[in-house]
Amino acid sequence: MTTFRLGAYAVAIENDRVLLVRASSPFGEGHWLLPGGAVEHGEDPFDAVVREVAEETGCSGVVERLLGVDSRFVPAAERHMPEKGPHQNIGIFYQVRVTGEPRPEPNGATADPVWTPLADVPGLRRAALVDVGLALAAGRPPTGHVAAVPVGGLVIH
View 1 (spheres, one colour):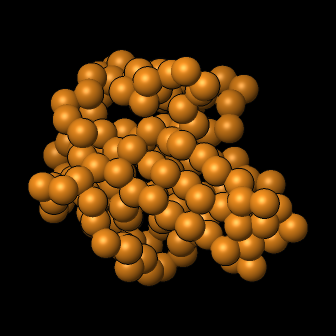
View 2 (cartoon, rainbow, N blue to C red; view 1 turned 180 degrees about the vertical axis):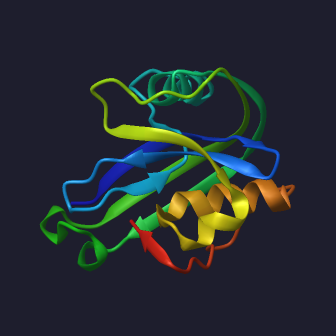
C-alpha cells in the first residue's frame, strides 16, 4: 500500500535569507524544512500554508504567488520505515511574505524558526523539499514544475 501526503509549503526569502524551521525527528538529529505541512481534509492549500506559517513560526504570512507543484515518489526501500511501503508526496509551494518575529512552535513538530543565509543551505541536514522550493523560487518556471531536483549534502526524505 502506498502512503500519500498533500502538503503546502512557504518559500519566504528576504535579503538573501530563507525562513527555515527545524523538524523534530524520531530518527535522531532533526533536519531543516520550509514552514508548511499537511493540508487538512477539506482545507484549501492556500489557507493551509498561511495556517502552517502561523503555527510553526508565530508570524503572519501573506501569499504573494504560487511557485509550483512537486510530486515525489519514495520507494519503500528508501524510507526510514520501509515496512510502511512506498510513499507519494505532493507539495504545493507558495512565495510568502512573512511579518513578525519568529518563535518556536509550542508543543509542535517543529522548532527553531531561523532566517538562514541562502549560501548556508547546501551544508544543512535538510529535507529535499527545501531544494525544490528554492529551485522553484529561483527559476519560476512558467509551468510551475521543476524536473527532479538534484540534491546534495545531508538530504533526507
